[in-house]
Structures are given as C-alpha cells and as structure tokens.
Length: 109
Image 1 (cartoon, rainbow, N blue to C red):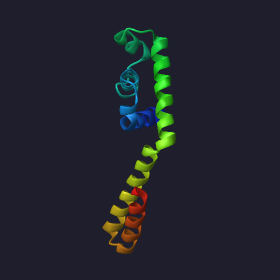
Image 2 (image 1 turned 30 degrees about the vertical axis):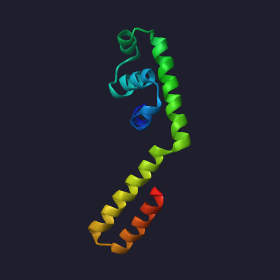
Image 3 (image 1 turned 180 degrees about the vertical axis):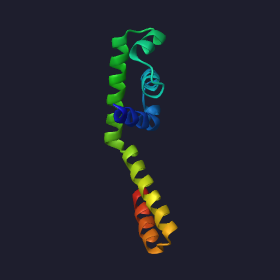
C-alpha cells in the first residue's frame, strides 16, 4: 500500500491542476495528510462511501492522465540520467558525461 500511496502522491503533485477541486482536496487529505475515510467524511460532510467513491474516481483520473501524458515516467527517467551524469562527472569520465548529456538532451525534446 505504501508504494501505491507514494505513486498517487507523485501523480497528484503533477496532475492536481487537472482534477476537480473536490477530488484534489479529498485525494490530498487521504494520501498526503493520511486521514482515514471516516475522518475525511466527517470534515467534508459526506458519507464514508462518498469519500471512497470520490477517491477512486480521482485515482482513476490520475492514472488516465499519466497513461496519456507520461509526465511522471519522464520525470523519473530524467532524474536517473541526471544522477548518472553527476556520478560520471565525479569520476572524471567526461566521455560518459558527454554521452549521457546527449541522451538527456534527446529525452527533453
């Protein structure tokens, strides 16, 4: 569950502006603030089932956006390349840095 919680939190950071205010709020309370469905229901003035349904719908939207846009996936690839470039630069391997920089440049286009 922790892996899913992290994944949804990352997707929420990226795609929150595309969600309705209600879905954004409920997902944030559940995944980032770690409130229970009952706690959210009480503060939002809706049923626990209503909260669950809204969260499931919001999750579905986030996965839909990522499937089409792939911003989270691309971000992870860019971070990995950046880390690799830093490591090779620290080692003084300029040829590898050049190759990785070219891959990074191609990735952002």
